[in-house]
Amino acid sequence: MIQLIDLKKQFQSVKSEILQEIEHVLDSGQYILGPKVRELEKSIATKLGVLDAVAVGNGTDALVLTLEAYGIGNGDEVITSPFTFFASAEAISRVGATPIFADVDPVTYTISPAKIEEKITSATKAIIPVHIFGQSADMDEIMDLAKKYQLIVIEDACQAFGATYKDRAVGSLGDAACFSFFPTKNLGTLGDGGIITTSDLELSKKIRSLRTHGTSKKYYHDTIGYNSRLDEIHAAILLILLNKIDSWNDKRRELALRYNQALSNATLTLPVEKNDRSHIYHLYCVGSEKRDQFIERLTKEDIHTGVYYPLCLHLQNVYAHLGYKKGDFPVSEKLSETLFALPMSPFLLESDQDHVVKVLRREVENSSDN
Figure 1 (cartoon, rainbow, N blue to C red):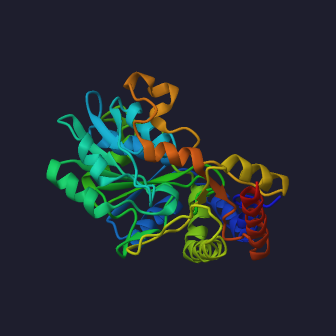
Figure 2: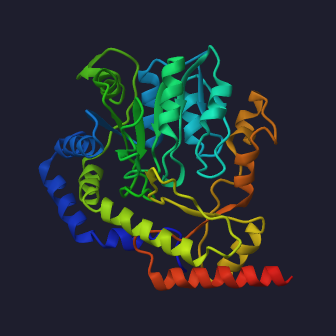
């Protein structure tokens, strides 16, 4: 089987380093919010060009804690994309606010600034643009809207560690940004983890309190908080991978270019990278009206694929009470019906990639003959 994301090869490539670091953590006697977490926070803040970073339990918690630290809750509205993983909206609901959806750009698949502006009301408090599949949203336009309407911008950068927008790092573009360290992410660990990046030191102070039961001093609690902390072992692993991430992302971009060149005339919709940003291809998704046919053929050839995402958020049962219906967000809905992901990882062999391309092109020819 050619894997969609070959995690085994990825982590085997650094196995000896990981085992050594785990032994160091074990010997240290410090396992929660210790020196490795502090080093990771400092390293990521420096790499992304922000003043602070706060490590938490996972990417979803990163969104929830950031929203709560900004005081967003009951009666508030937060605008986000309907074409994203559920956590982007779930976090909004979890703090008691209402997710308001705005359709995406048909080229980048990121939320459309023009559609955002149509959704702004007196109850709107924030925008959560999602850097979907590893490419930045149109952040200058979004930040201009935020300034115009006095809104907070929280980047959902969970799929985009290492991506850039106009030579600035994703994660430094909004008021705050949230990353996931889930194993399949470009920068992922052997479990769950997340981090919030910001240059708002008052915000990061609040989040540090919230992540540890609402306390800034042990056993003295200022607010109702959470238990959302990154383990030392995960921080140690992430510090190893942080030194690899640029080269791994470069390899993804190289493989994406090979896909683009090989499939350029294969009647598939290919991802488009805007000239003013760098796409780090967390996922490489192509589109076709005959998606099921392509997936079936690839599966028969032992090639793993994925569908991201088969049902837009506004059509999920949990959000039926919001009154959305099919047809409300035609671009997002079209993407959910046509896109599918091809194998992509820094450890994808070019020979395996060539086989994927060969199968796709053969199926294109077969479908055109029928």
